[in-house]
Structure formats: structure tokens, C-alpha cells
Length: 425
Image 1 (cartoon, helix red, strand yellow):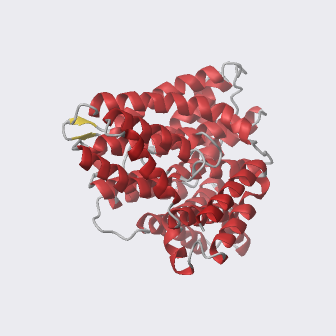
Image 2: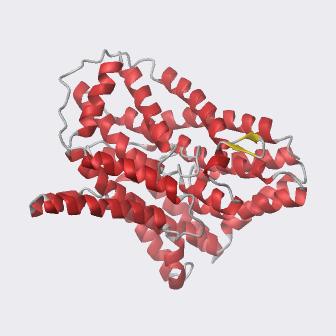
Image 3: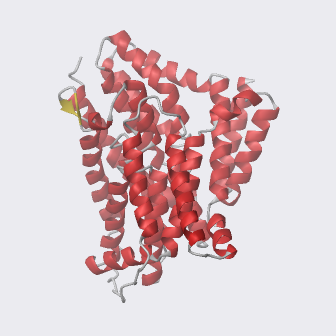
């Protein structure tokens, strides 16, 4: 069963990389094989799929659809164009904007909010939006590790290690993950600025878009606030964040209903939810769940501990860089869920401060997702948005920007986590 699971997994990911137009179909077909072969029993399907993430994406997509309909992204694009002298600076500004938002909101939600702004900027300047949307995506993945509410992996770490929102800034008298991620963001932004050195086209400001309806903008603000407040609630249901996003989307729909919107509006808003991306993610969750069921991910975890041979720095290094490699091809949510007890147990055996290995895991697994277009949900979402605009992005095209960006961020985080926490033994 284990060999079959590995073969199916390898075939699935090869096809996902080679056939981007059919990723959802491939993932669902593979998930079906995992289920019908018995690798993933029917009674665990509900637990291997992260419904919190699925509901968050669906709810946010709906809110963002209404947000776009108000033309607010076009207004934000105008403001960015007014303040930036060239396309190069505009893309960097969007990347920083995306990173800032993603520190306080799920990175997929961030992409759904900022990517339409990037697409609007590109349309106004008559250029391809591919580079700017990829930059938005990878910046959101990076900053998602900065706070408790920024990414599902951070939420899992907070729950497992009993860290609250403020512990990501300072904990146990030491610098928290937030500041380490911010320095990494600065390093990766400098790399991005260098990569875009040829994008010197002058920005041509246009008449500022007029926006009269700000309700959906407030829904997004409330979403951020509620997600932060929810992080302080102990023992809350696993799908709390998803219900918040879906509930606010429902509020938006009710408001439009009372305004007398016709059926076409609601049909259009619901159709704007990217079911292709949702299907892809559900399929991937089941595939990774299958690997977990047969113990493949556990084997990787045990391998890391054995390879360390009691050397803390070597174990730390392995946790970071194997996490980078694995999360470049495997969704980091099931990986982090599996690795948290492993690295916690390793820290206990070695008698060291567990936050060293916890932060190492998050730096490698969260930032490493930017290596490939299927390494993180935000990347999948971003490419889905580009597909809707008629742009098919190859794996190589994505990696030309993702790999140097990732290496700059991970190397910085790797050095700083050890500098601040390596002595806590």
C-alpha cells in the first residue's frame, strides 16, 4: 500500500507540473484513486481535508467579488500608480502591500484581495500581470508566518505550542518570529527589486476611479479584525475562521438582497468563486492525507531526527532545509501538522528550547512553499486568477521569480532564528 501511495503521489505531482490547465482534474482523479484503493478510508476523508481553509477561501472569494464590483481595486491601483515612478516600483509596492496585509490575514485571502489590484495596474499600463501577481503571491506566503493569524501553519503552531498573538512578537524574553520574518521580507524585496531591473517603463497616471460603495471594503476590514479576535478564543471549533469568512460573505449577500439586486448579480457573484482552485485543494488534501495514512510523511520526520545524531545545529539545519524542499512540492499544512510533535519531541529529548525547532519548521515550511507553483495554496490561487485573465503560467516561469525570492527569505530566517534562539539550550 505504501509503494502504491508513493507511486500515485509521484505521478500526480509530475502531471500537476506538466499540465497546469488540468490540475483540478488530476488532483481529484488522484484523490479518487486514493479513496477507492483504500489508502484513504471513507471515514477519514472529512478529517484529511482542511475545511477551514476551504471555507475561508470560498468566503473570501465571495467578499472579494463584491469588493471588485465596487471598483475599489481600480482605485487602489490608481493610488499606487500615482505614487510610483515606474513599473518596477509599482510591482515592489504591490509586493510590500501584499506582505503587510498577509501578516494579519490568511495568505490566500491576501492574494484574492491584492492580485486584482495588480491585474488592474497591469491593464492600465497595457502590460502582462504575470510578474506582479506572482510577486504578490510569494510575498503573501512569506509574511504569512509573521503572526498567529497570518497563515494556517501559524495557527497550528500557536495551538500546539500554546503561543498567543503577542508571542509571535516577543516571547520568553527573546525576539519572536514576526521580526525575523520582516528582515527576511526586506532581503527578498531587495532581490525582487534586482530581478525587475529591466522593468523601467514609466507609469502613466490616469484619471482616478470613483468609488461610492465602501460596504465590501468594510467587510474585509471586519474579516481581519474578527480573525485576530478569534485567535484569542480557547478551544474554538477548527472551522472558526472559515465560518467567519463565509458568514461575512453571507452578510454582504443579504445587504445586496435588501438593496433589490436582481438574480443575475447573485449568480455572477457565486460564479466568481474559483471552484477550480477549491477542487484542486480538496484533491491535494486527500492525496497528502493518503501519504500520512501509510506513514510516508512520518518516515520523513523520523529521517530528520535520525540524521541529526544528537547535534542540535545539524537537526536545526535539517528541519529548515528539508522543510523547504518538501513544502516546495507538498502543501505545508499537513506537513507542519505532522512535524510539530516530531520537532517538539526532538527538543524534549535534547533538552533544548522547543521554539528553536518550531520556528525553524515554520521558516522552512512556510517560506519554502514559494519554490514551485503548487507549493502553497496562495500560489495555486494566484495562478487561478491569472488563468481567468487568459494567462497560463509555466512552472519554469514561476520559479524564475519564486526560487531567488525564497532563498533570500529562508537564508535570512535560517541565520536569525539560530542567532536569537540557538543559545537557548
